[in-house]
Length: 320
Image 1: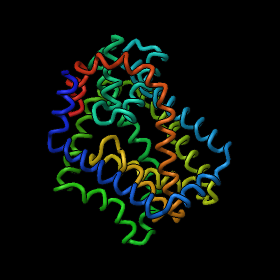
Image 2: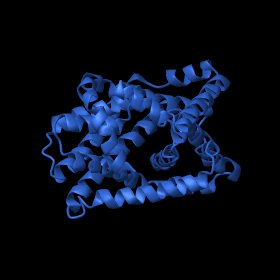
Image 3: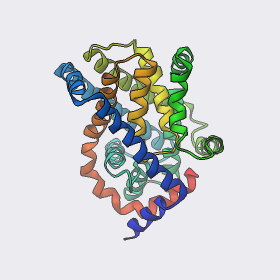
């Protein structure tokens, strides 16, 4: 009962309501794109992809998710938490499942925090490691973002500006919000980094696993586009996906639902020159792969749910 009350109160705030509205708008736009494109074109695009490409995409997505789990494990261990690799991986997949299937009530980080508390990890280090985990993920994409920005600069101005502006239009006073978000990110970085500043090896190892995750994601996009006979250079794929990643950080939807699919479809078609039907299929397939690979987390989620009530205030305090 307490969990339900916390969930309702979190979504009754202006920010929570904005995310619900943003999610509905973004999902509506995705549905509109599907309707405009037509199911036949979408089905034809999927049919062109060979079975081995789907199998390889699933394998790469699994490796990507394991790399994310390993990154968090490295941060936990270097922070002094006596975590085992199986424990960290199980909790990571519980968080992935929560992020995909319970976006309105349970966040992936909250599920991981709850799992950490349930197995007896240090609360402060666990919370700080989750913040550091996200920030190192952001740092990784910063390496490929300049490629995306270069593509954006070369694109038609109207098309180039549409991607961020359509997302930002859903926000009121968006400049102030973004400024505040940058300030909070810097504050989180300052707090979280104190535990690892004397351990550069751990930070570099965590960044390495971020690169593994990114390489798998970019390779998945690359082979799916090739399968639809709409190839794109690997580094162009990396740059465009980095732009999409940055757009999904704008807090206007729940777990990026709708925003990720719409921005990915738009970026690869309007900026990358991919056929609209293929770019839409690409966006939907990536979401499908994430959902599919997160399914093992359902076996663990029941173990972490009891820790939700304790985890939420701890994570909120550190996360700002």
